[in-house]
Amino acid sequence: MSEGATVQIREVPQAERATLDGVLENSFTGIYLRHARKTINEVATVRGAYLGGEPVGLSMLKVLQEGAGYVYYIAVSSAHQGKGIGTTLLRDAVAYLTSEGIKEVYASVGEHNVESNALFLGNGFRRTNYGEVSRKYGMLKAISMYRSMFVVPGEILLVLDGPSMSEFVASERAAQPS
Image (cartoon, rainbow, N blue to C red; front, side):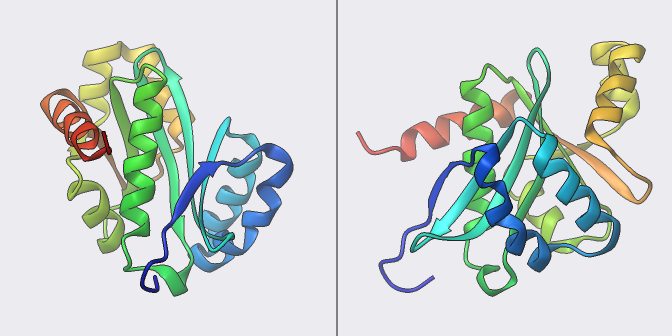
């Protein structure tokens, strides 16, 4: 980002989502690109990051069930990666989901995707698994949640919950201008 440039994040209505295709093209390949293109048109909430009015990133979010939300994707155009936009999008995603009554936020990332793991783990997410989700929600709800999250082999499931969620929300509130 240039000096003084501020990223603006806003919800992107269905009719404008095609304008984000360049971000997807720049961020994903193969099955992930195909799935992201499908998901962007199906998911209820897409939030776009804009720099000087141009889209540079996005997040796709979903309420899985009462109290549980999911970050499908966070994508940042390659020219803008490493500048904090992904972190800004993640913080915005958690704040948005919290405002919707979500108490825990899930995400799945490729086990060897260094950047995505650093982003989520560096912001308080921790590894979880089907067994933990099943104990918390019951087997049938856990199966439904996993289907909604589209966790595939080679990915790990992460969660922001409990004290980490409380600390995250408190730090976000403290960072807001009075």
